[in-house]
Amino acid sequence: MIASASKLPAMPGNAAEILIDIAANHPNNTDRNCSRDCMHHTAVKSVLMILLFAIPSLVFASDTSTQMDLTSTWVGYTALCIFVLAYALVMAEEFTGLRKSKPVVLAAGIIWLLIAYYYTGHDGDSHVTGMAVRHNIMEFAELFLFLLAAMTYINAMEERLVFEALRSWLVRSGFGYRKLFWMTGFLAFFISPVADNLTTALLMCAVVMAVGADRPRFVTLGCINIVIAANAGGAFSPFGDITTLMVWQKGIISFEMFFLLFIPSLVNYMVPAYFLHQAVPDETPTASDEIVKTKRGAKRIVFLFLLTIATAVSFHNFYHLPPVLGMMTGLAYLKFFGFYLRKIGELSTVRVGTLEDSMPFDIFNKVARAEWDTLLFFYGIILCVGGLGYIGYLEMVSQFAYIDVGPTFANIMVGILSAVVDNIPVMFAVLTMNPEMSTGQWLLVTLTAGVGGSLLSIGSAAGVALMGQAKGIYTFFEHLRWSHYIFLGYIASILAHFIVNFWTF
Image (cartoon, rainbow, N blue to C red; front, side, top):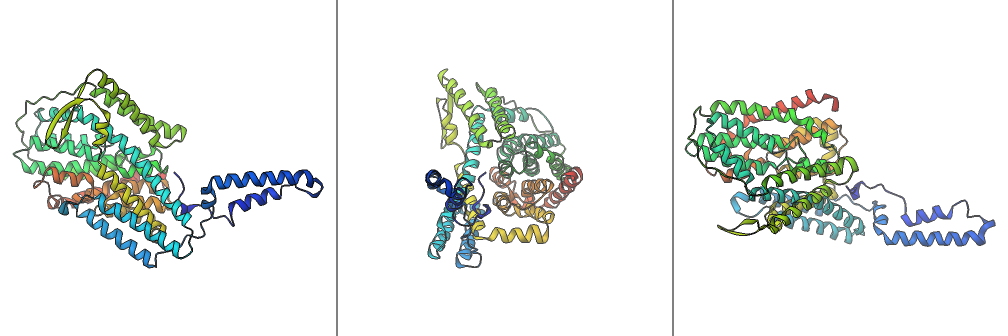
């Protein structure tokens, strides 16, 4: 990752002047060699000047003394109000119908415009501000391309009926409600580390709704169970949640270290699941005779997806390259395989509104089906939080939370806050503050940010999606009735982390 402009080391004076002075004081530049060395000196000055002006970012990055503290200015207060208003609209998406990306993308532009306007009117260095914006855009670009590759694979597997075949097998299995309760929970827990927790939750919810059509009580408990399991499973893998992905891409925790959270995540799921299980009807639903077969190439696409994950991990672990480079390389695997399917005449089902049509297999149809509103939401959040950090608010919060109060309490509160506010801006704020913490504390905040969203149905993308999928059956208040057991699992997972991973603190 490129270092934030606010974190770059300050250097006295202009970088060009410093390097030229070094050259001027070179021991070869003495009076007795003036005729020859003055020419050498002039040449060195010329080369340095050309290099420095050809790469102006070096000059701008070297001087951050002009960055201002705007927390007590009208710009700071206005930016904070704009962000709060934008996020209120995000949280009200279900009621207003306004897509969540719209308010935050607009807020991001206004916040940075206010900062630039203030700097221009107060003789600030606008170049440093520009570098800070570019840094935030780079943060988003890596996340965007990584998720685009992953979403394209998920959409390709969905079109090849991989998930539908799994759902069909579970529905016709003839298992009882209690056994299906545990099977869908554990499948959600173990699938979400590879596929994202949202896709996993939607798949498992389709299962419980199909087998519990005449048992709304089972559907309600099954949905709560799936949300908890999907969020818990996503917490111990870089691929399971956006927050874990951000931590991994930042290079704070290595790939294998995430698996230290396996036992705490399992505890987080098992504790509330035990109490939910007691309320599940001890009956057996009527088995379905529906059989869904996967389309040609489905297994090979699953294999290519696993190979893509291995590529991303290898690029990062062995060669210290950004994981996104490995994911985009893996996307090329799918593009070549898609070309093969197209050449052999394989057809793809394309849905336009409520209509379906068949056309030659095209990988770009899968790219088009990515969650673009979600991707643009990430852009707005990263730029908004980056702007508030540049103003100086995150430094204030970091001082209070991680120095005055202490990292353990602060990281536990991050999870609770994630139940009300989306965990993505919360985690990005923590990463932007970059407090000095042990590996154990970074693992703790990764755990709490991932599983804290299970405390309320609106605390995670999985919960919000299932409220829409099981509308009227799985609701905010039905989830709230079991929140005390979920909170018990939250505390138990934190204690398990301190016990199992004590050596990382």
